[in-house]
Structure formats: structure tokens, C-alpha cells
Length: 126
Image 1: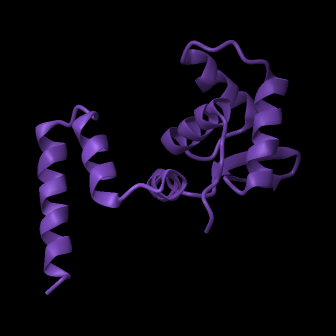
Image 2 (image 1 turned 90 degrees about the vertical axis):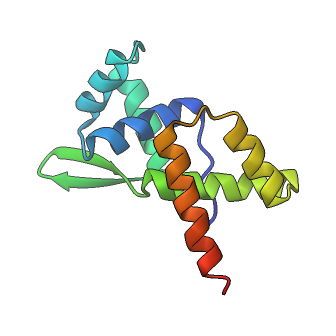
């Protein structure tokens, strides 16, 4: 699957859906505005329409109610974005990952998880 290109506003909607699951427009609007925005219902609806067209969000209809949910997990989305970044920048993987990790402010748990992942990747090379 190709990387989905989203705007900052569309990303805000995706974060709400990843956090709260399937929601109606008014519920999404409420969560977004709790985060400090002042978006109108129509603004949220427009962004959702764009995200559906891009394949990032799916809509289910029950009667007159429409519920929206992310079509990809946050993990899948981030993987797509990292692959796109590497291709667009022509970056080599190791320096790109090192730069990202160095600037991410990782916790001890994050570091342990990365170490475990590297050990598993290394086992796969044998």
C-alpha cells in the first residue's frame, strides 16, 4: 500500500480515531475541540470526507447515523510515512533511524523495546 498523504488537520482527526475508535462527526468534533481547537461540525465533516477519499478512514452507516474509523492502524500509518520519507529523501536507513532516535527523547522502556527488536531482527539474519 502506498503511503497516505495527510495534512496536519487530517492528522488531528486520525489521532482522535486511533485513540477513541469508531465515532460520529459530533463526537470527533468534541474530542478535537477538547484539545484546544475550535472546529465547526462542517470542518470536521470536510476533513473526514477527504480522509475517506484517501483511504485513511472508512465510514459505516446504520440508519441515518454515520460512524467513522481509521482504515489503518497508527503503526501501519507510521511505517508508511517512514518508508515514504526514506524514499523521498534518498536516505540510507541506518542514518535516518539514528537521527530519528537521537531526537525522539526515548524513555528507558522505549530503549528496551528497541533493543529487543534489534535482537529479533539480528536473529532473522542467521
